[in-house]
Length: 193
Ligand code: 5GP
Image (cartoon, rainbow, N blue to C red; front, side):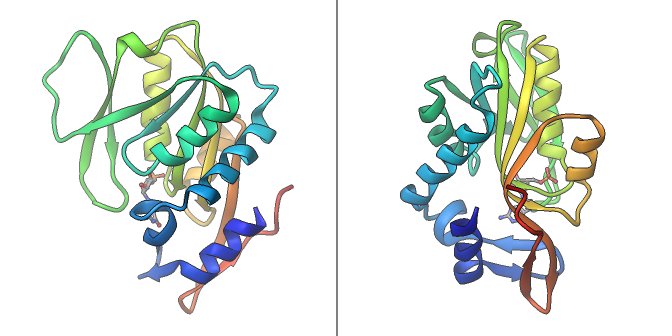
């Protein structure tokens, strides 16, 4: 998505070897106009996949997920993060190691909001090593729901998440794919559509 790549070039900041900070439009301040366009892009790509529900993780996935849900006219559910969770019968839970915070969180979703009738599109802000997506997929499996695909705003293709998803044969569509960080600059993969 050209406009997203341009925005990353303009406002993104590379931190260390493998982190991109995009607080000015995605992770802290949110640009709703850009978010709306992202929702449209995800819709265009997955519109024939029979999606009944959008699933994400709080908090940064919520904005793009809501915009996508608006396009599909389906509900959006976000997994909540907890440091630990005492087992509760009414929750689907999974454990996710956070790439940016270097800690493990439990994520959970109420059993009320996911069932075997659902065909789920996962939306998240970043794909790094694939832990967040994996945790959501665990929950989808526990609910006996099906996974329609995965939509990612910014994929760092040089980390292992993308490969893992491809290997599992899950349809994935990323709006921006970063090939490398070179001298503090972002190098994108050629656009896939
Ligand atoms: P993964 O679970 O794929 O290893 O990492 C994805 C999650 O970590 C995303 O939900 C996102 O919150 C966070 N994340 C990973 N890499 C980055 C990054 O470069 N920048 C920011 N802002 N968040 C990231």
